[in-house]
Image (cartoon, rainbow, N blue to C red):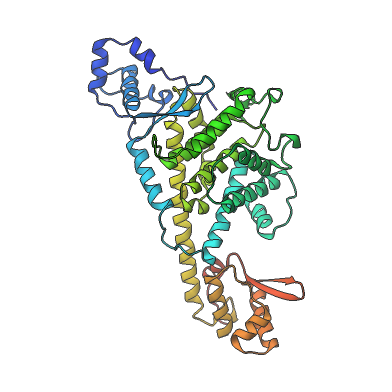
Length: 452
């Protein structure tokens, strides 16, 4: 990664501009963005400025537009004690409105009652976020292997699997705790959960780094390139307390949009880098926690790390742009809002695909001939129920009682469906349990109806 060029500060620009050039810059009426994008000087200097302006004049006009709408996060500061700031733009506000409508309201295909289908969506999203958040920090386990581990409950077999398992359990812990204030103790506990059995030294779990740890962030592709030197270790306890105070601040004073506040928490934790390792995972977990605290219930079903994983360079660059332009957090806020919007659209798409699969599968179930088997009405009724309630489990006794049939007939019905890989058969104690395969709708809808 190439480090961005330091942006000229507003004070330097003002100190070296004539009255005529300043007037020309102001007359352009430039906004804080360029074609809807929150552009950094590193890119802007290569663009063609408006007619009659130099690159410096154009940058000055943009900086003035941002400064005029800027608010400071007084409790969130860089290493020099300068507060980070944010100027919400039209495109940011549009995205915030979209997120307000989708993540705190209802979504087509998901009602307010916690149904089996919603539980399935929730488990899927928690798994997805756990996997991708860990993969952003180096976990190399494949999705298929990771999903199998989380679904079956088997123990992790290596460090990558342990990272994913820990992330999954920590996210479930945050969800189960419900809405509650941030405390430094809670953050340390969550870090301990996230990093257990994944660090070089177990004594690094759940504790702040020290001066002896000498933590510096390098570019993975170019280990000699320093991307970020975090604040001194001696400052970390106070910085963590200020972060908690910011997270818990009431809305009665200076108002910050809850989503922008959650993203700012994510940024500050990663910027401070208070731990020897696992800072990114912890920062994204705190974002998740802050969003749930603010009533954005749909966050339970979203994986923002999936969007970040598609363009990790943009994610890192958003940090660097903020650091190299007077603590302007607009770069990071804009990038995270885009990722969050993509996550919401991804969920819409997933629900639409699964709904269509279920519709096609239910249509196929009207025919007795499925996957080359002549299914009876009892088997088709069970599969229809399994599509609506994917977390259901069936026994020979329950199937026998539901249809008033003999034990051998019920056993034959269920074994037939298991042999067609439409149900999974598991022995629990003395009884056999039959549950829907994870891809039941896909298996039914993608296969042609075959008569035998």
